[in-house]
Structures are given as C-alpha cells and as structure tokens.
Length: 228
Image 1 (cartoon, rainbow, N blue to C red):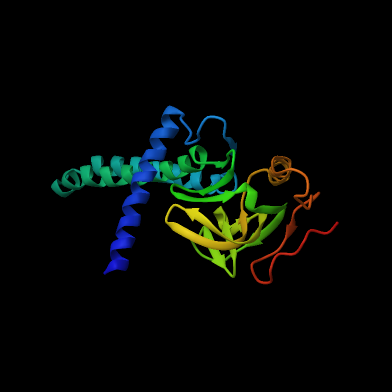
Image 2 (cartoon, one colour):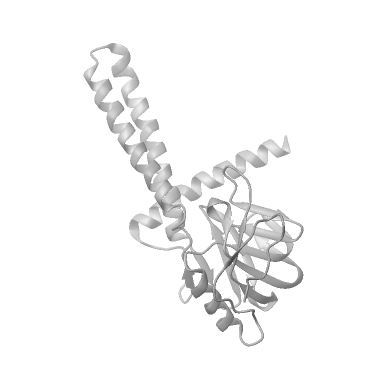
C-alpha cells in the first residue's frame, strides 16, 4: 500500500512539474538562479521528442476533421472528449520537451546540480570532486534515465552519459527524492569537452585528468580511462 501511494504521489509530482516547466518555457523563464552557469543536455533526445509532438498534434487535428465529417450522434458526443484528451497528451509531450530547455544542469558556487527531465535532481558538492573526465557509459532500460549500481550513479537521456565525476569516496548526495551514497557520478551534456574544461577550471589545479576526446564504455564492464 505504501508503495502504491508513493507511485501515485510521484505521478502527481511529475504531472505538476510538466505543466510548470511548460509555463516557464512559454514565458522564457528558465529554472535557474542568477549567476548560475547552465549546461544543456537535451540535444540527444530533441529529435525524437519533437517528432512525437508533431505526430500528436497532427493526430488530434486529423481525428477532429474525421469526427466532424461524420453525421452521427456518437461522433458528436465523442468529439469533444477525444479532442480534450488528445490536446492534453500533445501538450504533455510539449511540456516534457520544455523540461529539457528550462531545467538544465547548473554550476553553482558550491555544487553542481545535475538534472534530467521534468523533476530529477542530484546535487554534487564541488569540494567532493577529485576528478572530471570525458567518458561514456551506456545503461539498459526502455524509459530509464537514472541508473545506480556499486557506487556509480548515471543520469542521462537516451540511456547514455558522457562526463564522469570521481568523488573523494562514498559521498551522500541529495536528490529530489532522498539521499544516495555514491563515489562516481556520470551525466550527459551537449558539449562534453567544454564542460570538462569548465569544471576543471572551476575546481582548480589538481583536478583531472584532462582528456582530448571521450572514451566509450558501458556499465558492464566498468568505464575505462580514455587513451592518451
């Protein structure tokens, strides 16, 4: 019963976040405090999302035209409910796409805030990071965007990450739904080389290694250092 309650609560929170992010996108107000450096990560999934959005609105319009052309009572009764449901779905998808635009990763004064989609967030204290490197991970799952195993937390759209942070050791990180104990964090950004350089500059000397190009790896086996 508690599990079902939590699932329902999460669903409600996601729904509210979707519409809140859509509103922010419409008025062009990113969810970022003044002075924060925003890091984009939505380029990987944007083509698929916008294809779904176009298809959703086209489906609503086509169904509306078909039902208007049918001279029957059932068609007139069904037209408005189907239109409302169809528009809700299309706008929901638009809100999901908006989430990637208004909720980017943030480099703050004392932490890196990693985000994904309408609601996920994990805060990584900058003073806990000992290395930043460009390395790719892939993880399994049909709709999964977060993966955690053996001290490794991966956050990325499309089941992929391309930047990894090594922490001083097992570190408790605050997320939107509780705490996680990890010693490495991987996440996806649109420009991994620039982000690695930015974070290394922000963290100061002694943080590395620098990489000239990201290496590719998967969750099994563990990620390897890029070739030099």
